[in-house]
Image (tube, rainbow, N blue to C red; front, side, top):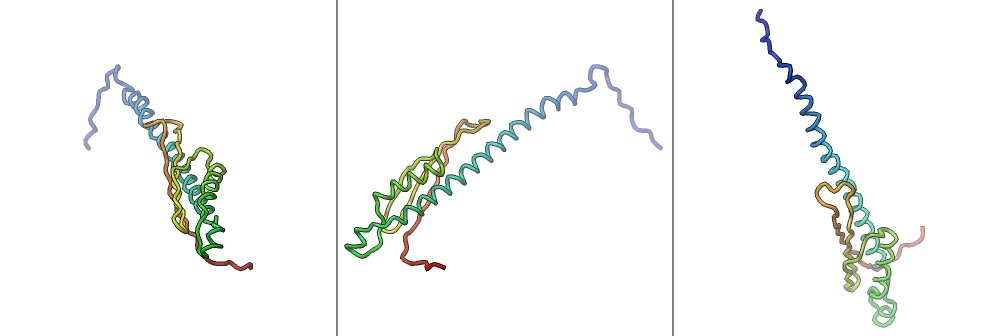
Length: 146
């Protein structure tokens, strides 16, 4: 049976690999962990902004223009009430968000919002601006009480 080769270790080189990993491993793993935290925060804030924008569009689509209903008999949305409702809904749900635009076209409301998010670890950048877009339509109908 052949004996394994003997490797001679010089006294000044023992532990070099351990020291290398002790320096390199944190330098690689810490930015990866920071990026994971930043990505999680951005994803959560983006979901919150999208939900608030959708809720604002749905609520704004429920604001009927009573004058138009009485004069023409058609369903249209009150443009003056839309801005107030959209601003109020965003302040309640996402205080840091702002309304970029809203468009009322007949019985349809489109709301575009954005929100700057400051990252806690800022591996690549300090802040990220998130954008959300939602459209809601007013439809005729009646839900009877159950």
